[in-house]
Each structure stands twice: as structure tokens, then as C-alpha cells.
Amino acid sequence: MENKQEFVGHLAELRKRLIVVIFGFFLSLCIGLYMSPDILLFIKAQPVAADVVWNVFSFTDGMFIYMKCGFLVAILLTLPLGLYQAWAFVRPGLSDDEARKTIWFVPLSCFLFLCGMAFSYFVAFPMMVSFLSSVNKSIGAVETYGIDRYFAFMFNVIFPLSVAFEMPAVVLFLTRIGLITPAQLKAVRKYVYLGLAIVGSMISPPDFVSHLSVTIPLILLFELSVLISGWYHRRSSGLLVSGSKS
Image (cartoon, rainbow, N blue to C red; front, side, top):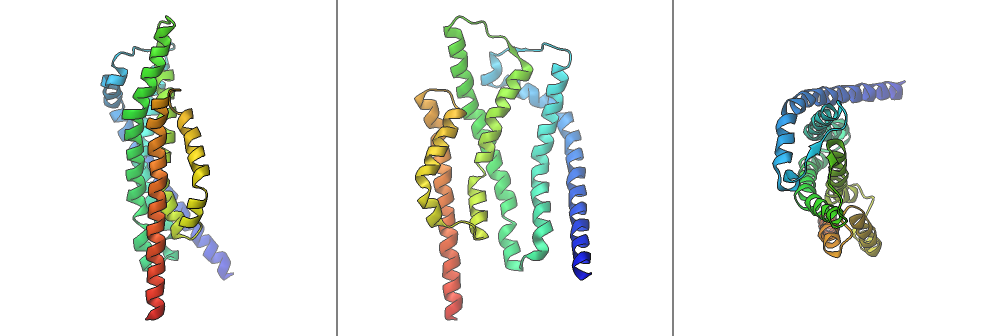
């Protein structure tokens, strides 16, 4: 009976947290829809899009892009709230020391995601547009882009890289809960390099410089993850040794 009441209490707490996130999302959606015209004009004014004419091929194209932009802004604004609510949900099961240590994953994850968005939009995406546009011009094709295809292509580049930039935070968290160790990361390093090279080639133009421009940051992120994991592992081991001596 007690376990059942505890389970119901957890469900009630989860429901409360989800309601807060949903409310925050709809509030952020209102903000995103209000900001969408300015955001789209900002994107259009960037050098990567300055020479691209956005065409619409149906009456609803512009409206759908407007709505998608609002939803993306809402997701971005809701991310910190969602991460915090997830931390708050598991907070009762953590000690005060664990809570202080894990709360840093919320701002760290948001910061890394923003870094990934900045890198992918200002570095990777312009390289891909420039390369593909040069290929189209080399075969004498007339470039006519629909606004829906332009944004679909842009999002397919930005979001995988933004998620990839979460690697250090994910590795630190998995190290923190004991699922991985620095030794395990080093043991699979060559396989990770191969996987990152494949990912880099899939989201970058098929030329050597572009491959390196995308793959090298991904590899550096992995190495940073290994260093962070090693630092935390050594720190935890040092604390355990000093605690046992005392």
C-alpha cells in the first residue's frame, strides 16, 4: 500500500512538472510567433542567404515557415525550463552534494546547444550552401529555391550539429552516474573517430576542407569529453581515498 501511494505521488509530481513545461512552451510559442518575422528577416539578411531568392510555390509556404520558426524558438526557450524540471523531478532522490553537482548540467547543456547552433549556422551551413551553389552554377542550372526547402535543408544541418555539441555534458553525466569511465572512452577512441568522420562527411559538402571543418570540431568535442571524464574520475577517486584515510 505504501509503495502504491509513493508511486501515485511520483506520478502526481511528474504531472505537475509536465504542466509547467507545457505552459512554458505555449508561452514561449507566443513569443516565438511574435519574433518570427524579425528572425526570418535577420536570416535573410545574412551573407549566406543574401544572394538566394526565397520563392513560395503554394499559398501556405510562407505561413508554414512562419509557424515552424515560432515552434523552433519555443523549443529553444523551453529547453532550460525542461532540463530544470527534469532535475527538480529527480532532486528528492539526490543528496545535497549530488544536487549541487548535477544542477550545473542544466546551464551547461543549454550553453553547449547554443554553441552548436552558432557553429553550424555561421560555419557549416554557409560552407554547404556555397559548395552546392557552385556545383549548380557549374552545370548551368538556374537556382530557384523554395523557402520550405531552404529551411528544411538548414534545419537538417543545424540540429544534428547542435545535438552533437551536447557530447561533453552527456559524457560528464554518464561518468557521474558510473555508466562509463575514461578508460572505456579511450578504448573506443578509434571507433568514435571513425563514426564522427562518417557523421562529418554526411553533413558537410563532399570536399576535403569542408570535411575537416566539420569533423575536427566533433573530434575535439570528444577529446574534451574524455578530458572532462578523466578529471571527474580522478577527482572522485581522490575524494574517496581521502575519505577512507580520515
